[in-house]
Image (cartoon, protein in one colour):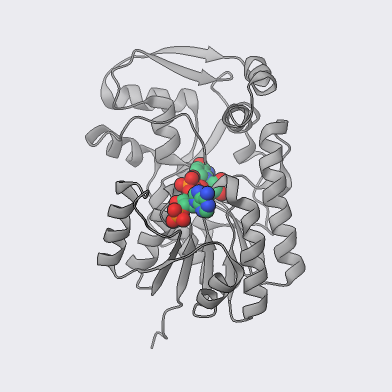
Length: 317
Ligand SMILES: NC(=O)c1ccc[n+]([C@@H]2O[C@H](COP(=O)([O-])OP(=O)(O)OC[C@H]3O[C@@H](n4cnc5c(N)ncnc54)[C@H](OP(=O)(O)O)[C@@H]3O)[C@@H](O)[C@H]2O)c1
């Protein structure tokens, strides 16, 4: 007989990646808690609506600041902590690590990685600085002896497909970063969330790195554009932006605008999401969970064809 489900606490659950994680956790039947900054008259209506939706789904909303005593009290009540705080708050995770260490009851902590495998790549300096923070958090977790999993979810597929192809806009030209032949891993956000909940509960992934690299989601920009042309019956002109131009932008744009271009360079020019072979000692999500029917990039484009998302912003989390 299946035992009681682990209680999952999500920091940043109202954010872009976080809302998918919360929904996945609830859908699998985990008692789910979201730690969120206090709601007040300044809170955007969209966040208030999301919090109401969470309430209706049975999520327990805990309102508070990222302050030791407040977070310790909540952490003591849960088994798993998943953090999807925004990039500027990455170092705030040190407070969460400290509280988890003091509490002593948490079976697994997943910090705000959700991107490339930062310990194995060397991108342009502005992105490197972001990854340095994520690396520092990893080392702090290891030093604290907290049971953890580091996830490399690669690109959020809906976000990047929307950014690259702009399906809801009437366009004739598509920007291509580099020569367009470099492969990248684009995973649908719902799958990233579902894999993360599976990984968080899995004894095999304790104190390990898990890469999300399903074979049907590895694609180049040129292949993606061809596929999209077939599906929507339109041809697009490609505006190639050479790698050197992107490097120059990363050197001349002021922070934080120099970060997104450095991310594009890492993914689509350097090919950092496929920079190394998955070896026998590496864990990969679609191999760990064969039975899970993930959404392929073909299927994601079909979803976009029927239901184009809102226009993409140029910002990255
Ligand atoms: N691989 C990819 O393609 C990809 C794409 C996007 C993000 N990511 C990664 O996913 C993680 C989460 O990013 P995200 O874009 O989902 O984050 P986000 O939407 O920008 O923000 C997540 C949450 O952080 C909290 N937050 C925001 N500002 C704060 C502040 N000033 N003080 C305290 N809390 C604050 C908010 O939660 P409350 O309002 O509820 O407190 C917010 O909902 C990051 O590690 C990011 O690098 C990866």
